[in-house]
Image (cartoon, rainbow, N blue to C red; front, side, top):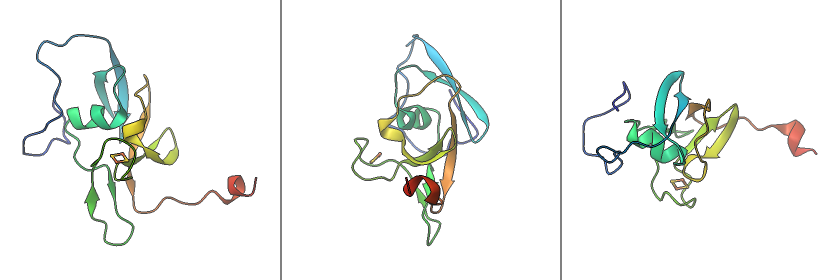
Length: 114
Ligand code: FES
């Protein structure tokens, strides 16, 4: 499974050859991706060739998952309109809309006030 997002290089995240199994369709920046059901968003995107998940607020440096266990926060993306979701801790779901996060997400003051 290769996408327009794929960059040159070797990835540790590739689907096993001949691995069938159930797939779900997710959308990354509007592009449909068929990925294995039950995987994390981070794993699914990495298997699909995505290498930049977000950019930093100050220098716009590209960032990608690092720890894959919820510690580093390098994997933040927008999922179904909700910003700053940890993609390594979120399981893919059919129809899920994921967007690359650019810079800092806006604060939702209304929800913070209760
Ligand atoms: S990859 Fe580190 S928190 Fe998700």
